Amino acid sequence: MEDNKPASFVDQLVVPGDVVLDLSKMGNQTIKLGGGLHQHLNVFFSVLLKAKGDVKYVPCVEDTVLGIVVDSKADNFLVDIKGPALAFLPVLAFEGGTRRNIPKFEAGTLLYVRVVKANTGMNPELSCTDASGKAAEFGPLKDGYMFESSTGLSRMLLSSPTCPVLEALGKKLSFEIAVGLNGRVNASSPSTVILVANAIMNSESLSVVQQKIMVDKLLQRIQ
Image (cartoon, rainbow, N blue to C red; front, side):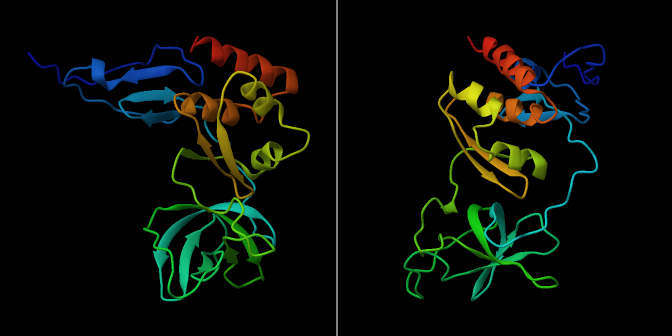
């Protein structure tokens, strides 16, 4: 007999990164989800809720950001970079770009781009090349898991020397990340992408020592 009663997990204590619910192990139940959860396939993980009052991203020339294509026109792709207005990415703003080899991006495509114009009251302009016109690391990000962060956390991840949480993760795991100054991060890791994402998101309010301890605890769960 099928059970249609709502599933209740009110008394379950979890920390960020814990598996809260595995749909493959459940019957036909009605599930009501609250905040602080992220779904990956059939599994729901607990995550750290984003703090209110985050500083809104204001584009600046030479910022490297992660943008999401929302539409395409004859001369530009319209790209969401979390700024006050959509940004323009000219269809020729690619290495060797000509009218004959204009790339085709569907809505939702994630791009790693550079801000080349950022005038007040105007749409920012982007490019998929470095200052010398080379593609470098810019372009579409086809693999990985993108998540939002605060602009402050993004700057911390890009700081030198290497951010403590990335250093601790790098000692045990093989992964790649692309960090945008606009508060977006794309992590690519074969089997531990959720762990990497949770570790990064949880690190913002922790000290150097606390970040290392937190990473150690998360890593213990996959050993």
